[in-house]
Length: 246
Image 1: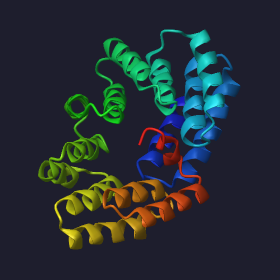
Image 2 (image 1 turned 60 degrees about the horizontal axis):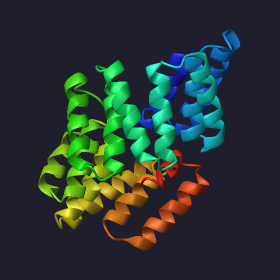
Image 3 (image 1 turned 30 degrees about the vertical axis):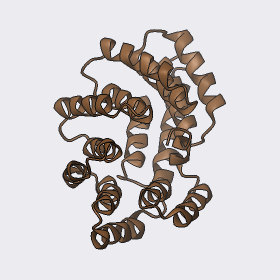
């Protein structure tokens, strides 16, 4: 039941089902897991993740992680989720240190390297972030969002042509459309950027409002970006939890 909750969360986050449905199913599955064993520490770590991404309740997340760490201090997944909480609190150096430690305990887990890449990306350590995401792709060539993440780091570095190539290789449609909107804009190819943005809005307006906002921000369309941030508040978009880092 706990792993099923994790899969539902991943499906919602990757656009494979609506976020509302994914979060609802994840809560139900986590509750079943907790009913089966209230002292199963991974379930408390999963509930912490739900609190962060679905409810933006960092205090609730901290309470679940505290419980999980009391039950099983050395669990790599719990440590990984703890680093996610640290990120959302803006404590990037602490998150990176913890994630580097987790990679020594769980070196072939692509999720660990992905999160380490994110922390370094938010800390403007773009080359280090790219190295982590290249490791993700070596471990899991089909990992949704990995090419997109590399592309974003390349955009921040100013290597727009290479970023476009990464975005074009992205297998997740929603991530690919977000990335193409930004990369084409960076190259001055606004017709292509507009076309990608139009499809993104048509298909994913409800589940990707925050992403649309930062794509518009990259295009220097500040007023439109704030309109989409307002939509993300109305939709309770989990991406809002990343605003402090973005």
